[in-house]
Length: 286
Image 1 (tube, rainbow, N blue to C red):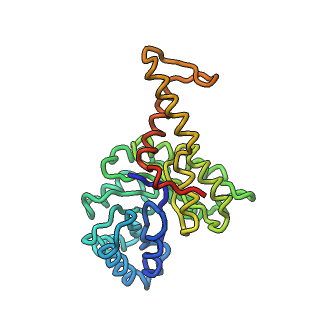
Image 2 (cartoon, rainbow, N blue to C red):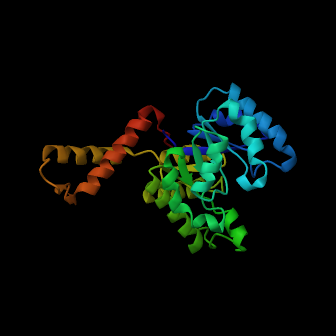
Image 3 (spheres, one colour):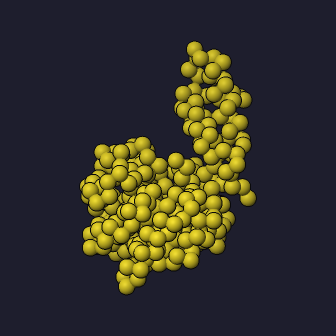
């Protein structure tokens, strides 16, 4: 499944849903949680269910439900289950037990947990491997966690994350790969700062994330480009694979003046898998 960009859309704004579908996002996250005021939730459930039933699925349609301990999650799931969302995004997840509880409400629908929004959740990141068959991926967030522990901010003055939240990001990245599922980078909140977004998204892919969440359609092409292999990467991957195919008896080779071995071959194969998945016609370049 191609999941470079996942665009949030407020569940109480049906006017924005169709517009978001016309973007190049790989998935929309129709939100029933933080972006919807409590009094608007019943109408939002109805709007989301209606859109799921009627929309042409140019992108995958996910729904972020309310947290399991909010008293609202069961109503959210009940309202949209028959409309067949492609996945459920679970906020304030607390490890495999949270996933198991949601599976009981919505069997056979993949789950994308937001895995770092409470202090206790940090210590459960390793548990997701036990429920990998129910997971679409794993993502993180740095908005709820500082509020939960009384921190004044998750960021330094230059906008970078402070050490505690860099730790949460890194642990989520490794937890996703340990479970064998997509590692989804968190949002970049300054949606008009496209150069800052480009740098942040490129860093995410460099570090091993496979996609990223977005809060505005303007961000989608930048994110798609960052998480799509470049022509240079594809050419190098092809050359690496060809070099090993030409000399299969060797474990280490020289290519363009540098040594390559098994990790380089694995990376080359991963890039070619992404190339096959994305395809030339789906590239979003700026």
